[in-house]
Length: 166
Image (cartoon, rainbow, N blue to C red; front, side):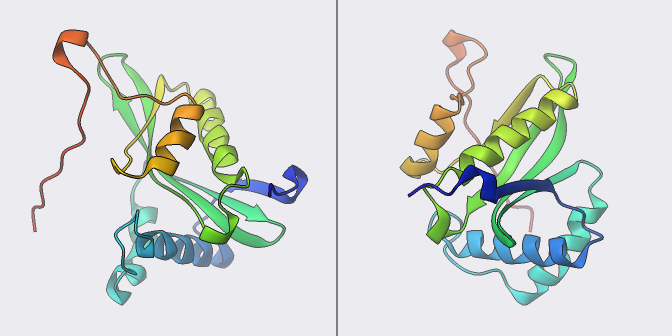
């Protein structure tokens, strides 16, 4: 069942605001606990460092979704730069809606808000990563116009890779 769109509010997080700091911490922790996150809650030391660390990142952009007064969704984004377009971009690092509010249009509204912010900032694109088997999220992203990045057909599609340095 969809939520009445007039009850959904998307705001840019102010990490100087106690309520927003709590919402960010709670929503990121809930996302981490989800099987499509990392499948486990975040350790206490990570939770303590999360908001201060985000505040130190000059390219942080965090959008919160509220249904009435309850925080129910988050988009943690970082501004970057496209060398091929010589313009800024926004990368959605985390996008999550609490389980009981999924399928109600909140993720779609968060994606629309990120896209609007990207336009306001003169960005050339919005990027994201998604788990290969997170079919629900992949369908939502594809419905919003996202596709695997391909710069040249002969090179194939881009893959997201990682290497721990710890």
